[in-house]
Each structure stands twice: as structure tokens, then as C-alpha cells.
Image (tube, rainbow, N blue to C red; front, top):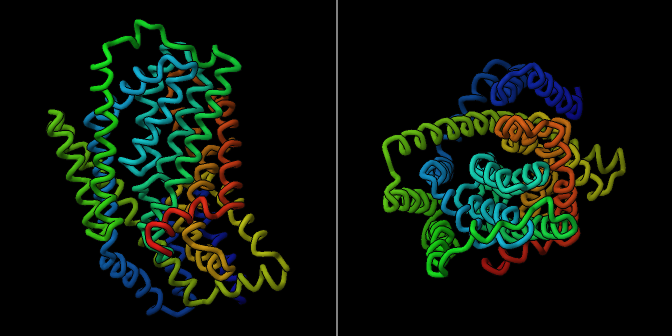
Length: 441
């Protein structure tokens, strides 16, 4: 059997198992071990999973995952995000659509504290959504705003998914984080511009708050700005030492976790329940990531042993005659298709053994491609009819917001993200300028 046929058989078998409802790590790992067993005999099949587990245990940067996840949950469970929204409520309420703009700002700051899009979605749905609906905002507008804002969670550093991508693609995490800064801020600015224009054309979508809801002494308004300073302080406390080379990635993640813990203590919100809930959720998410990475390492080992990447590169470029850009666009379209039933981490570990080496072989920059990957997966998350975020939003939204409302709310924001993706593909320096400037590449 040819390498191309083996690769297609492995992927189709894995997709079939996923459609039956099997867990992602179980489907990936099972296909990898069975393929190794038939290719190299019982010794190869038995050793594959063990070798992947040992490699995972020796992967020192993996310690960053529980640190960043713990930091995000501490800030979420201690209600520091509530303070952020109150700040935006007071300062942005006088603008038509101002609370929606403030919600995007909230999501940017939450992203800088957490790094997980799901956490941003949960905070937006529980804090911002009820307030926006209570103040007369259009339900379709606000559900779209929250979903779009949560998409920034895996792009703005410290992105947990970019840490995983860095490990699998063997790229510097610091450069990937910096590469996500300008695209993340650009997307946030595009969302804000869209909201302001829509609400200017139709003020009923985002009415101005009455003066009694936002009037307070200027001194009190200034004090509210402290809610925004706190997450920025946490962000810079871990990013500045890392970018300057004073600390390693793991040490910086520990600084962020400790800073978040101390912030909750100083605000008097570090109760036993907050701590226990944060630790339990951190443990659950971390274990999920580790099982998926373990399965991905085993799956990738089979591809490395087969030399399937070179075979598929030859198939696309020589037999089909496709250009590198055409292949890249097809890869992005495949992400959108997979995003209908997989989350971003699963998509990464499933295709990383094939896509990452192929992108490098085609001559593209792997730092730049990491940014393209994160944006494309978020577009996939929010694309009807089966986007992952759509159903997550429906589970968190009140009964008056239907699935039809959620579908129609997200389409304009998806178009904005497609424009952002096309812009970064056309002008790679948007992603590559900042890491090049800081690291002197």
C-alpha cells in the first residue's frame, strides 16, 4: 500500500471513530497504535504509546499549561471580570453601542489574562449578556458581539493554544505570542468599527445609557480605571521578564499564576470555594490537554516513520500541480470543515503531523502560519450550521435567544474575521513585524 493510501486510511478511520462519539484522544491514539501494529509488528505497536508518554513527561514547557489555566480561572472565579465590565459600563455607556464596544474591550483584557476562548465566552455570557439585554440592546447584536469577542482568547497572549502549537511545530513561544498581538488588536478594532457603524445607522440596536446609569463623580470614575490596570499589571508582570530573557516560559507562567492569586487575595475574594473550584477546573482542562497531546505524539510518530509528509507534498505539487498558495488555502478550508465537530486543540493535534511540516516544506513561515491557524479555527467555531461556539452560546444564553438568532447574529462578524484573515495572508508583516522587532530577526 502506498504512503498516500495509508495516510488517507488513517485519517478516514479517525474521522469515522470521531463521528461515533468517541473521545478525541481515544480516536487519535487508537488509530495510531493500530497503524503502528500493522506496519511494524507487535513491538512497534506496543512501544509507540509508551515512547509518546515518556516524551510528554519530559516536555518541560508543558508545565505552562496548568499555570495559565489556573491564572484564568482564579481571575474568573474571583469576579475580577465583573469589575472590568463595570469600568466599561461607566466609561462607554454614553456612546451608541458603547456597552457592546466595552464588551469587546472586556474580551481583550480577559484574553490577556486567560488565553482560552471558552473562558471568554463563559464570562461574556454570564456577565455582559444579561446587562446588555436589560438595557435594551438587540439580542442578535449582543450574542454576535460576545461570540466574536471570545474568539480573541486564543490569539492574544498568553494564548494556551499557541503554546501547544509552539510545542508541536517546534517554534519559539515568545515569537508566536508577539505574532498574535497585532492581528488580535486589529480584529478587535475591526469588530469595534463594525459595531459603531451599525449602531450609528440603527441606534435601536445599541441605545445610549440614560445619564442616571452612568453619571458619577470623576474621582470615582478614575478609581474604576484600576479594574483595567490590574489585568494589565498581571499581563506585563509575566510578559516583560520573558520577552527580555530574564525568565523562562515556565517561570513566567508561574509569575502570572502567583500574581493572579495575590490579586484575588488583596481584593478579599480568595475564598476556599474559589480556590477549590479553580484547582478542580484547572486539573480537568490540563488532563484533557495532556491526553490529546499524548495521542497526537503517537499519531505523529507514525507519520514520521512513514515519510507520509513528503509523499503528500509530492502528491499535491507534482501529481495535482497545485501551487503552494492553493495548498495553503485548501488547508484553511479543511480547518473550517473540521471546526464543525472538533475544538481548536483537537484540530491542531490531528492535522499537525501533516500540515506543519508541509507548510514548512512549501516555504511558508511557521510563526505566521500559527496566527493563520488560530484565526481560521475561530472562524470554523462560529460558522453555521455546526460551529462549536454556536451551540456553546445557545447553552449559556437565556431562553428568549433562539438558535436562529445566534446563527444570524454571527454572520457579520464571521465576514469581518474572513477579511482580517485575508489581510494577514496578503500582508504577513502584520504578524511578523513585532516578533522580528523584539527578537531582531
